[in-house]
Amino acid sequence: GQNIDQPTEMTATEGAIVQINCTYQTSGFNGLFWYQQHAGEAPTFLSYNVLDGLEEKGRFSSFLSRSKGYSYLLLKELQMKDSASYLCAVRDSNYQLIWGAGTKLIIKP
Amino acid sequence: TAGITQAPTSQILAAGRSMTLRCTQDMRHNAMYWYRQDLGLGLRLIHYSNTAGTTGKGEVPDGYSVSRANTDDFPLTLASAVPSQTSVYFCASSEAEGANVLTFGAGSRLTVL
Image (tube, rainbow over all chains, first blue to last red; front, side, top):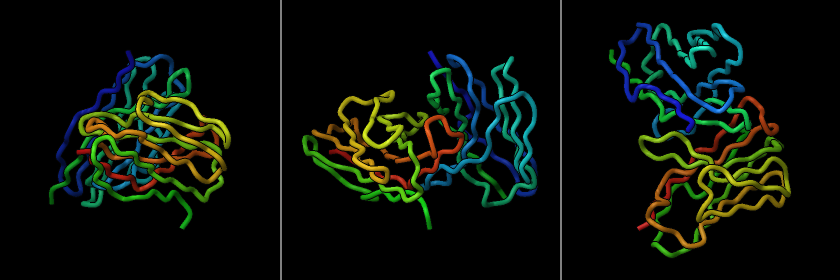
């Protein structure tokens, strides 16, 4: 079967750095996505990786290793507004998105 | 503001009743999707439409139906609701099938008693 694993919950301090990991086992691979979802709101697109390596976008970076079936989302200079769930999703060989259950990130002052 | 409008925001429904969740987008996106989101689970695709006039089944289609009469609207119908359909439902769209970015609506919270 297809599977996306990410931690259920993480806690970090305002101003610090946090890394949210995602491992996947899917039928084929056509890209990995990270979405942010604030409580009670819609998911919003953060990043897309299809080649190995690091993609940087402001305070957020996303890394991919296809050989290891692994990605991480790195959030720097954490702000209280970063408190949200972060969803990892992989597009499989049929171009269907397989979603992880999400990581709830709690930021403490 | 361009985007996706879902209605209703929330609804309590008696088991056995029918219900239609509405979804309208104004971005002229070709592809549209319905997902359900349940605690502890990833988003699960119910139905999708790659272009007006066509629809397809996702991972969990049973008990749901959709139609795509035009580009903008993609309603989801529950013909006879059951308690296991209690969930938050998200409509989403993308420029085309396989596009990298999904735009989501704000969600519809449905409780079936």
